[in-house]
Image 1 (cartoon, rainbow over the protein chains, first blue to last red):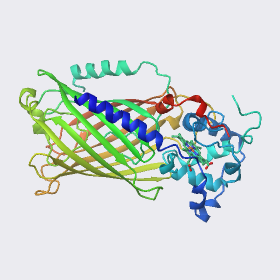
Image 2 (image 1 turned 180 degrees about the horizontal axis):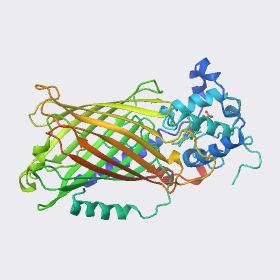
Image 3 (image 1 turned 90 degrees about the horizontal axis):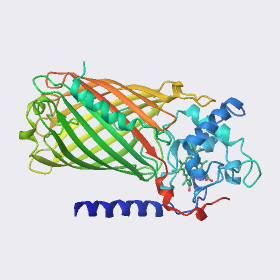
Image 4 (image 1 turned 90 degrees about the vertical axis):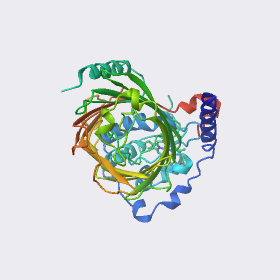
Length: 136
Length: 296
């Protein structure tokens, strides 16, 4: 009896939590980024070594939600979109630090800041959405 | 050094978990008692085995395994079940009970000090030796009782924690304040736990590597009881401190280890702790159809 109740509870948690993730990403988080964060400069911008390290960090931490090709997966947005391409490095750094927990994006504060800049350096090397070269 | 029969049991449990698992790594802190504000990633399931072995003064050596299943229900809510037991030399092996725990992130962004709220229900026998936290006047005397006397008494309690974390120049510093209420007529009991840790290097390597420094964390933790509502303070509590280490393998398994030392006579001399964990990534996606893929 207890076991059955536990199973029902587990199924309810699984179901309700996936429906909470259904909303489409809308970029509203951009409006919450303070100006001084927006203006921050990536100290590793353009460095090939940082991009190579960022690619590994991306594959280990981000690909399972955003796709190995970063084109988006299961309603989680593409990171090769116009929106991400037009965001400043500072805005992306703010998003990585804080996440958007109510919309399903976890904070990446647990990664040291240098590693977050390494991922951003990698994101900047990706071709625009739909362009050849990124799809597996 | 080790309580040897108990240590042999640790090794046999560990052997089961050392089998290669094709999964990815978890980003977590090496603490055993302290919680940081890192929640489980939404959709991920972490499976962990925690072990504790010790040889308390005037008591038999024991080994206490705890099995943990932790699921990221959302990015602001993590839910977890524990099942635990213990084996004591010259005594018996018993299943001591289970815990059901939830952690919530109340604020939508990070601050210099970020809070997380924790609520847990536990149904655990008095023979429990897992020391997942220390509250009230918990002390060495409960380890000196035979399982046949302590095991039949099952305690149902509610436990709440305020978890605070700061991340600064690669360091994580976390503070936990614990208030626990046994649901039978006993007073509120209090406890605390503090931890600090950082990866051995902050910059990730540009090559795939197993033993590079970014895969290792080191730090320390300190925790203990703070008495009860009627006798608040450090008197007749137990207190522990020790270094903590972990190693995340690219194959997906994280190993943690910590020797912890009792700081007063009411504490066990040395606790040896181990943890082996791995994460099943995005288990929820297995229930979604590939056609929902959103390639923009």
